[in-house]
Image (cartoon, rainbow, N blue to C red; front, side):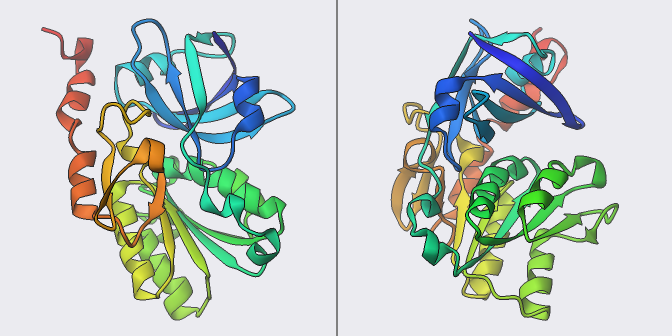
Amino acid sequence: MYKIVSREELAPNIFSMHVNAPLIANSAQPGQFLIVIVDEKGERIPLTICDYDKDAGTVEIVVQVAGKSTQRMRDMGAGDFFMDVVGPLGRPSDFIEADIEELKKQKFLFVAGGLGTAPVYPQVKWLHERGVSVDVILGAKTKELVILEEKLGSVSENLYVCTDDGSYGFKGMVTAYMDELIGNQGKKYDKCVSIGPMIMMKFVAATADKYDLPITVSMNPIMVDGTGMCGACRVSVGGETKFACVDGPEFDGHLIDWDLALKRAGQYKDEEAECKLPNGGAK
C-alpha cells in the first residue's frame, strides 16, 4: 500500500499527488514513469514522474481525469492509499548520461503542452541544477489550463506561456512562438525537447526540422500497461518498431512515423468516451 501524502488541484480535472514511495524516489530519474493501481479492481495507469524527493521519500504525479480509474483517483486525498505503485520504469532522458561540461555549452528549448508540462518539469529542473541553460515554451488551450507555471519558471532561464485563445500570454500555438524565438528573434538552440499531445509534438518536430534543430519527443501518450506486454505503444522510429514503455518513452522526433503514431493514439477513444458516460456506460 502506498500512502497519498498530499493532493492539489492544478486545473479543471487535473490534479497532482505526492505519494510515499521511498524506493522509487531514491532511484527515479527525469524521463521515467511509474504504474499506479488504485485498488483491486483498478487498471494499470502509466503516469510520468513529475518530481521526486529522495529525502522525503515521495514522488509527485500529475493526473488528468479520463476514465474510471482516474475518476476514482480524483476522489482520493491525503491519507488514502493506492494498492500498488511500480517504478521507476522506462529509460531516463538521454542527456542524463551526457558529459556535464559539454551540456553546459549547449542551450535547450523545451516545448510543453497541456499535461506534458508535468514530465517536462523534472528534466528542466535536472538541467538547471547542473548549470545548463534552458528556455521553455508552455502551451495550453486557455489560461485556466496552464499548470506548473511557477515551478517551471523557477528552473528555466526564460519561460514563455502560450494559449490558443489568447486568454494568457502569447496568443497562438507553441509552434508560432518557436518561429518567433528562432525565426524572428534569432535565438539559437542546440536541442529541443517536446512533450504534450501527439498532434502538437508532430508539428513541433516539423518546426524544429525547419530550423535544423535536433528534437526529442515523448511517446508516453500511447502507453497502456507500461510493460511492453500489450503492444499498444508500438511506434515506428526510423522504420524500426519500438515500444514506448520499454524502449522509450523518449525518441528522436524526426524519426517518428507520426501518421501511424496518431492513429495508435486514438485506438481507445470509443472506450474512453463510454467510461465518461453515467455509470461508465453501463446499461
